[in-house]
Amino acid sequence: MVIESREDALGQCARRLVALNERFPLPVVRTSTDAEDLLDELVYFTLRNRSARLNADAAFRELRRRFPTWHQLTLAPRCEIEEAIRPAGLVHQRAELIQKLVARIENDFPDGSYGAIRTWDDLAILRYLTSLPGIGQFAAYQAMLYVLGRSVLPVAWPLTRLLTRLGIVDQSFGPEAVLDAAASLLATGEHRVLYDNLLEHARAICTPRTPRCRRCQLSDLCAYNKRVRLRRGLAALEPMSED
Image 1: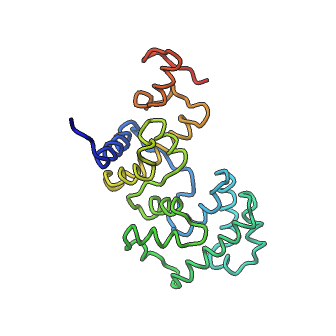
Image 2: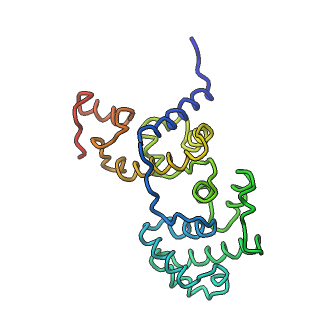
Image 3: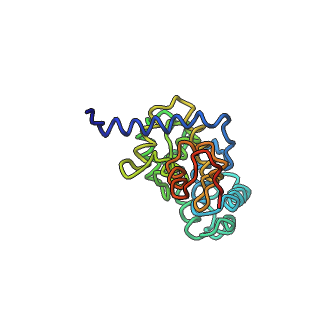
């Protein structure tokens, strides 16, 4: 009898996750700022966190309209920043965080160019970004993936929900471990495609309360779907309602 090691089991989960890429023939189009600038991405995340996407987009556009350069924002009265980001809500907290964030990066990179960050290794980038005001690991990974093109997979809640239903994430392995292991298996450039596709699928199909199982191209792999069928006494190939 062969006893599977924890590392082997984690590797199997990671390979199952990577294989999902084949289920999505075309990458989705990202619907946020698509920022090429690191500071843009970090400021946008500060607005997007706990805020609807449309509201965050409106706040970001108004912020850039009022402050064409980030340096202007560091010199502005806090009330002007609050007024600009009003659509996103939580204006007092967000305005303070954004002003401190921009000031900190300007202080760390006084020449106005932080392109040197691209030469750092992943751990150094992660440590620096998570030392910034209001930036945790998820925001850092988002910036590393979308702006710096690093081989990381952020742990977003919709993605965690999807992987848990599929049975790839469970009590044995949390999402961080599985996603980090999967990230090490993907070729350069594949991380964003897989992440975007799975995140969009989680938001559009594998919704929190009423997942659209009949429309799901992953249903044959889904542990949640199998449990629901057993509970309802449905045949394996019988269409399942979405109610």
